[in-house]
Image (cartoon, helix red, strand yellow):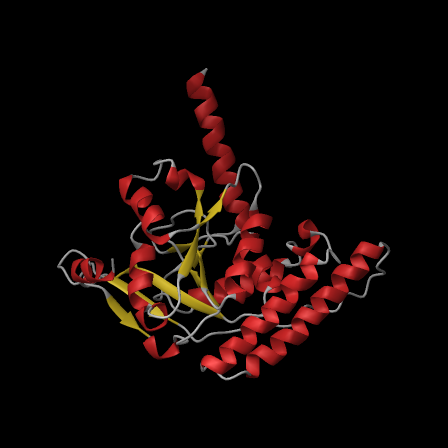
Length: 281
């Protein structure tokens, strides 16, 4: 599907431009994290990452509403074209998404996540959901930040690609760990952080990325042995982790963009629900 999409991207309506192509790893595994503007974002990112996608498949996280057609016909068509990792937010299945992502990453493939979980326009970067931070804590794989937006001068789509990064080691917890599960979780987190340090210095050629895939495989094998529950394993991120990732994306957006705070967003949602309830009555 790349040729027709590439031809469409060159038209006056889209005018796709890419900056930072030299930062793209030529081999997987890695995790793409980007802001979300429209249903065409995934196509623009796929075209921008051509250097990597000629060898590896990219699996986007996508809410099941898209498959049901609630996000328009284009979204539903792209669901079938790409193949996705489904996210059912109402059923709370982020653990299964992380598990599926680990399976693809250990095969050397690519994961794409829009952590805002919905589209934000008007130069706003939404609050990042914990899914991507939990995945980043679970997988010793590099993250590739991407900023996507419409240029003011001509209305074209701009994709800026940053340098790959790894999550910093978790902060040392000084409080007493009372439950055995907490001790196991802390131990697993420390071991994954150690694997990340190895991954960070691995070369970005085919051999080096295979080493990273093998490290992810070690994590999956430990999870398979059920040394830690899937639920706890998929909730190792801290609040600072979300901001660390969000700042890497914000750096790739133009001046004037602002971050939407979680409290404000919750307040807007509560207000809109209240307004809806009054109108219904």
